[in-house]
Length: 207
Image (cartoon, rainbow, N blue to C red):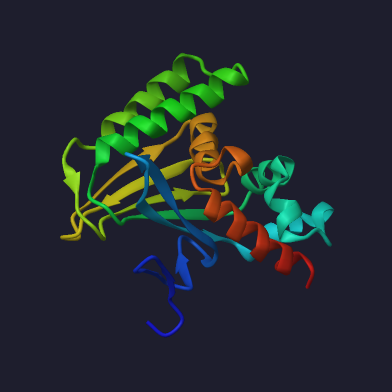
């Protein structure tokens, strides 16, 4: 556990491996307001190749606060051709399909806004939404969103009993918008993760 980072009471390893070793560059959680209470649903860990900073040199010298408010910075971050893994661990029991429905709506809206929601994207997004089962996922189950340098992605659901299911996202427009759902600056589903990424990347850029 030594160097694990704790988010709420969920532990994130300091690095994980896709095809390369990826350090943990940011973390936070997703929250929903229910009856005026902020409920934390998932803890988020963002793993990325360190080389991502080579694609962000334009922002060298900027503070974390400046980066957190700069959507162009996060556009460049999500567009960088590096491996990225976003791990979302369940804090409060949720139906997987709830997350799938949220994701589907957000991705569809983002694609439609830039006129990239065609039949191919619709089919790919339906396949993603159908992948999320209607059953409840208990605490410590997790979703892994793996983004490859090629622009494609893979989503894995791991239950608390370590059962695993996965699906490939071959449509690059859909894959990009799934990544932006978490990493899209001011429109991210997790502002705390954006703030943490901005601070850590500001430090990396000043080295």
